[in-house]
Length: 196
Image (tube, rainbow, N blue to C red; front, side, top):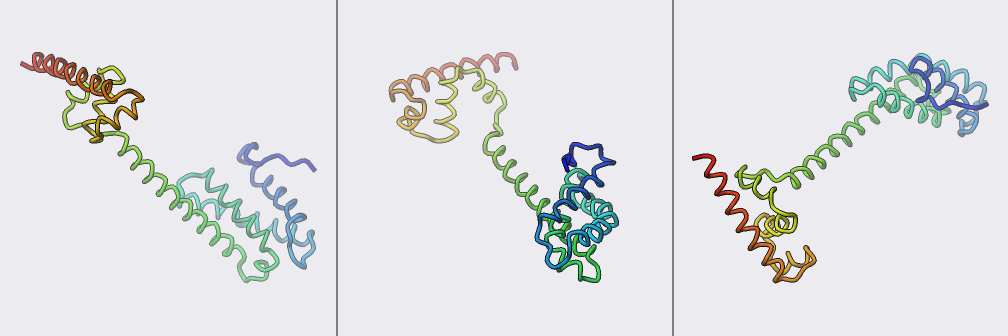
């Protein structure tokens, strides 16, 4: 039987496609003493009853329906893997819901950590200049002069290290710094003339 990936189907057909996929998985996953046919019937029935409510719960946690469906599907795959044990519980639907909620909370935690990392990386990259005129003037410098100024004044690097980073001689790094300072003085003086 050829299976179509559920995410390629229209949303109305996804749920039934996942039932087919998971029923097919039942034949390949170790399900203990239950026969595959019994697993198909019981599991499919539980899936039909619980999938939509689990997706709804996870959607409220994630605020993203597609990701909620993915997490619910992962939870139902875990249910299938543990079906021989979980099917004996009074409420296997509660078990799969709990698994889905844990997966969703883990995803929220990962998203929050990723967001913090991205923000800290942006904060490291995006220097908030104190003087907008100075920042704009630095942006107008040629590349090597701009790099020399940033490395020397913003990163407090010695001229020898700047030369290494710019792949030039120390004398050339000093020339870049000298020319950059001179050009900045001119640019900032122009800015003062427009203000007055």
